[in-house]
Image 1 (cartoon, rainbow over the protein chains, first blue to last red):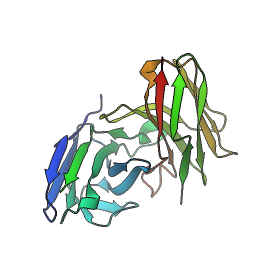
Image 2 (image 1 turned 45 degrees about the vertical axis):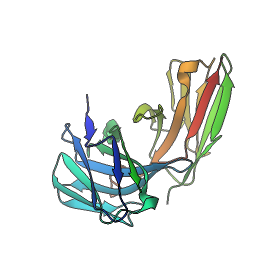
Image 3 (image 1 turned 60 degrees about the vertical axis):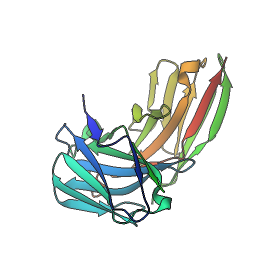
Image 4 (image 1 turned 120 degrees about the horizontal axis):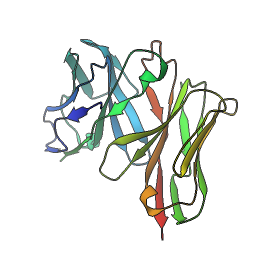
Length: 115
Length: 115
């Protein structure tokens, strides 16, 4: 079974703090993704990575950065947390290969509250 | 740019009744996914639809895809309480190309099944 884990289930941070959210997958997937989930908006893509050290912006990258130093690990960084970044953050991973293999597998999510 | 819209956003059903969730998308989508999310949990993949006319069924849920109408449906037959959850559809364009399998999600449908 594919396993995607996230470092924290719940996190409370203060405005202005630097926040790291970590995601690890154990299936040697090339692609990794960070989404945020807000009620009524579904999931929106923040950043994704298709290889080590490679990254691309998603639909809402402002206020975020990412790091992928190893294939299995993808980190989301909030350089200076703000209250409008309070949300549920979901990490996902998928293969690069064809066929049905583009399906994304999701981690359990991190609920971040910025006060 | 792919946009995905679901309706209804809220669905309150009685046990034993049938209903359909609709997922419209704005432009060509290579694949259409349906996910289920229980409160406080991550996303669980239900169906992957790959081609026009595709139909997949699992228990009381059946998903279909009409690429000409740019419409996917998730039909619920004889609803039971255990089906209460949030359901998302998501489109995926050019999975093998430079989009790297990015997903665009609908807003989600919160389904509540009452006795």
